[in-house]
Structure formats: structure tokens, C-alpha cells
Length: 73
Image (cartoon, rainbow, N blue to C red):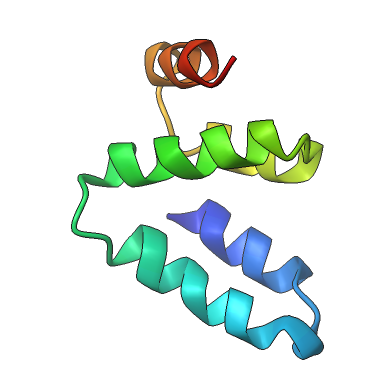
């Protein structure tokens, strides 16, 4: 999940807990990887964060992205 590294590199040191939680909530989730990334994409979409939307989209197939964004809308 290279996109997680890209996201973590953008998080400042004062928010290091968020950086650590990304691994715990996505990379080591009890969900299937695509499901965990899909939930993260839906949250990024709801938060209207273009950077996170693009990063999480890169971790999913086009079909999964379409399904997640349809559900989030």
C-alpha cells in the first residue's frame, strides 16, 4: 500500500498519532484490504479532501472506487 506512505509523508510531526493510526486502521485492519481502503475513501469523500480522495482511489480498482463513491454520495 504505497499510497499510505505518500499520505503519511504529508502528515506533520505534531499529528504523528494520525500517522500511526493510518497503519492500524487500514494496513492492519480486520477488514479485507479493499474494504478498509473503501471506508477510508468514503470518509475522505465526505470530508471533501481532494488529496486523500486521490490517494485512496489509487489503492482500489475503478469498479471499487465507483461503488464506494456511489455509496458515499
